[in-house]
Length: 172
Image (tube, rainbow, N blue to C red):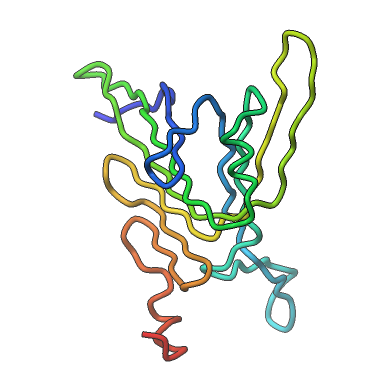
């Protein structure tokens, strides 16, 4: 019987896999394919064709409760390795609740740092925004998506989507 996805019960955020970043929420990047509109002889109208393995700018954003030292550190203009480790709760109608590990690993550079605002008895709404150059998403230890913008890597569920492209370009 199929397990039913329910909720992300909690997660932790890390820099360089060792520095715990504290209370933060994360907006993960989108995978919006670069595309081209195809029209012409033999086509009845238009069709949008995605360019496999090519994506627009991918950003991730960390939203903080306060103006923290970690938020300031992540504003440094260098490559940051940010990891997010979570636990997802699923429901199996035969076994009951099941816990599932989900890990997102990124390498990224700062684009924007927003110190936020000062208001009495309120969060500062501090934020860091990054351009993501590399992302790997793993569920239960299995890599589901891996994308490396500068090394021609795009794998989905273990399938190398760029293997033939790299071969055709003389890169593998």
